[in-house]
Length: 367
Image: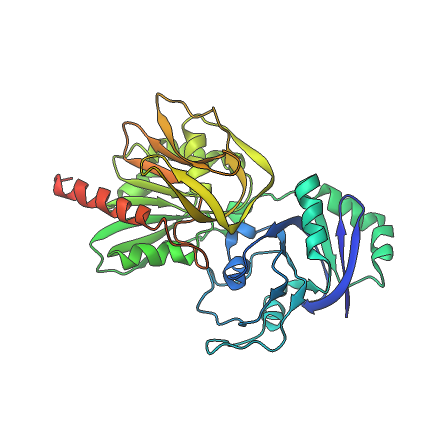
């Protein structure tokens, strides 16, 4: 079946459909990872977005279900150069095409993903649509109603759309009780905490300091998630109180941005974001540069972090964007990248060890 990609700038591409049929509008972004497509598709941070994979062959090791970062696909569409219909891996349960069909997600293959990526790098992330409902790309472009939908689209209510509604606890016998805020968390954050002996209670995004106080916690984990961080005004207000509860706090990605906003910093939308597994980040305390996995379209604006309240601990070695913040007077640190990432480098997993050490030190002090 024929499928089309239509961009807000009036460019369109014709390819072949794999996955579900229909039309879906979203924000078109690109990911440079060579592996980890199952993790990418199921990452809630991609809510509202249509993903273009720059690596040309996708699906060669199939989909196994165990590598998923959540229970479903959150991306709104998927664009690849070539999708493999006969994967080869002992863990494979189904093809990438069947996985998309199972989740009702439109996939487009057989298009020039390198050209699409160049467009997004030069013009910036833009809205678009993937569709199987037109005879040609020209016909899709001629549909003014579709073009109006594309131009008007904005990712909205993202965290509310992906967050859990109920608390759930894992690893009941763990030594340290951690509240994991679900702003759109990835399962590997949960796994990383459980592997280090933590009892983890996943809590809704809107959970307050008063509700947390009733749980008997040793630490608080602020997860990744989708959308514009500044949109989450109620959560930001909650974090002003939560980060001053005296408990160790560790934030990742959106959690990093929300914490910065709660302490007076600003965030900005990046031209095309950081989405891949090879972003170099310099850790000033260790005087080392690590290769990290990232997935974000917003960043804390350099120069807006109040030095009386916090200091920038990590920066991106490519473009100088803020990648980590350590706060003064409270046991709180946050990073923009993903130390739990799979697939991707695990070089920064030491941050989870540091978080656990902070909880151990607090317990030893009798708190």
